[in-house]
Amino acid sequence: MLQKKVVALQKRGETRALWLGLGMMACSAMMYLFIGIVLVPLHRGSVWADEGECNVVTANIKEKVHCSFIEGSEDKNIFHYPCLEIYVNLTHLGQLVMLYHTEITVDRNPKCSYIPPDMENYKKVQQHVEMIRDNFRKHQRFLCHYDPSRKEKSVLFKRLYPPEGLLIAFAWPTVLLIGGILIVILVKLSQYLALVSAKQRRTLI
Ligand SMILES: *[C@@H]1O[C@H](CO)[C@@H](O)[C@H](O)[C@H]1NC(C)=O
Image 1 (tube, helix red, strand yellow):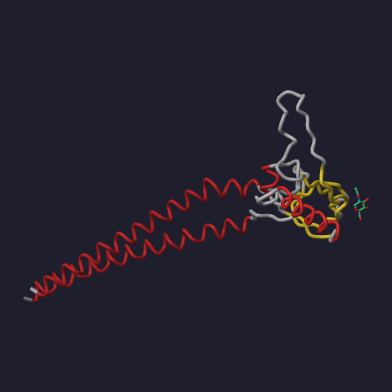
Image 2: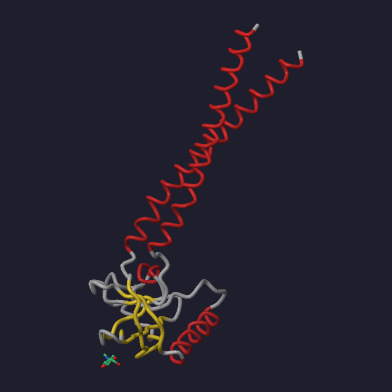
């Protein structure tokens, strides 16, 4: 009677462990999918692979340009934030190029060097952007990221998607996958061993 109960409990535990292992494997598969679809293209698009010294040449807030009478271009130059434009000298090449905050800035608005975070009102946004501008006027020398092939002329202040980041992103689902596989193997192994020992007991009796 007691033995039957123990066996039933053991079976339930094994089933749960098996589901846990399979769930972990499924989870890691979804994470791989997400990395493949979302992160890999971002990292591959990040061509600013080398680091070099940049020197600020100009840091200005562009006046708003309104070209409403040119059809179709109505809102293209009207931003909901002051448009900071920073040009730097990539010193070892002696090239004057536009500086962008990150890859996201290039993607979302290549006309401005910096996109401020959403703030309550325009005045605060303006103060924030002016502070950034003044900072760049004060600290003119810094390391920036550039495309070694020079196909992409601009430089980045901060690189969000370096290849090392992808490696870290791949580490998590890999750990999960290995854990899941180990659990499944252990459950199967213990089931197999139980079967073998039961057979042995039967032959002994
Ligand atoms: C950039 O800096 C280099 C070295 O300091 C200088 O020779 C060059 O004239 C500068 N280029 C521009 C466009 O300012």
